[in-house]
Image (cartoon, rainbow, N blue to C red; front, side, top):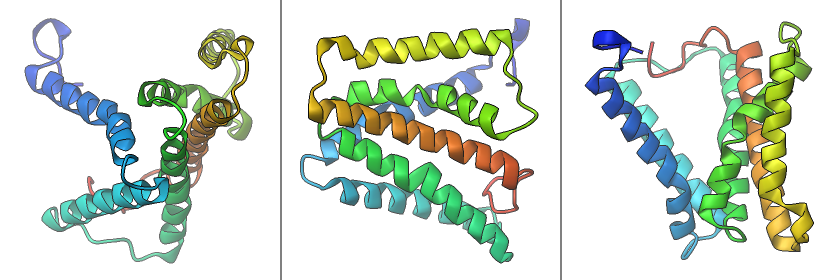
Length: 191
């Protein structure tokens, strides 16, 4: 992160961070609003279409050609399902049964899920004392939010589980990217 005087982030970096937080933070609210007139599948299709259009336009503007290697396209398909289609659909379905705020709280478990998947799938990742404490603390927080002692309401319970499945899908996608598409496969809009 580019820093200003005294190691503080520059105004530009702070503005970019705030813009990103606004976009990501409001996505769950916009999903909830879209569900008032659309099905979860339609919401997902809209999100994917807008995202794909933005990436294509960015690649055109930057004159960055699409990959030619079919193996890269295969990896992109796997990542597309794990990082976009599955979690977007799970979150959209879940928001039919729980609040957008609760869905966004569950989205914050992505680092926990990614850590668990990385520990299970990557030999170079080791379970240290600090990671153990961090994971246990994080999952204790998930348990508090889930609140099984308050009684399990079928629809809400399944919706919360769907949110956790969505973040697990993100975790699998990030580990997949690290294992199979690292360094970048020449298909990102930013070199």
